[in-house]
Image 1 (cartoon, protein in one colour):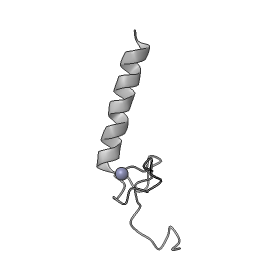
Image 2: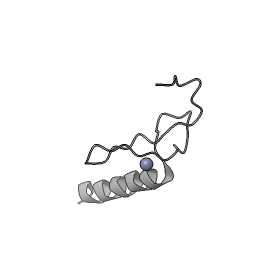
Image 3: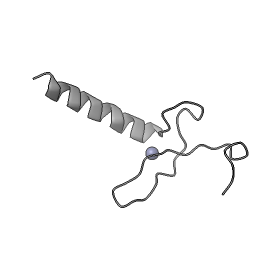
Image 4: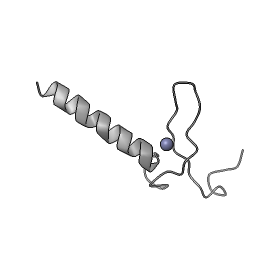
Length: 56
Ligand SMILES: [Zn+2]
């Protein structure tokens, strides 16, 4: 397994229900949220749903 310093491409940390990891590149490789555009959008959608639910 390559070390993080030599492997430039940081992958999305999303894990599917079938235990498959997402292989897309993370939006912000140096950030603390390592998700691709698709799963970042998914996370935002979930936050909106959860916020709307708790506001009731
Ligand atoms: Zn992803």
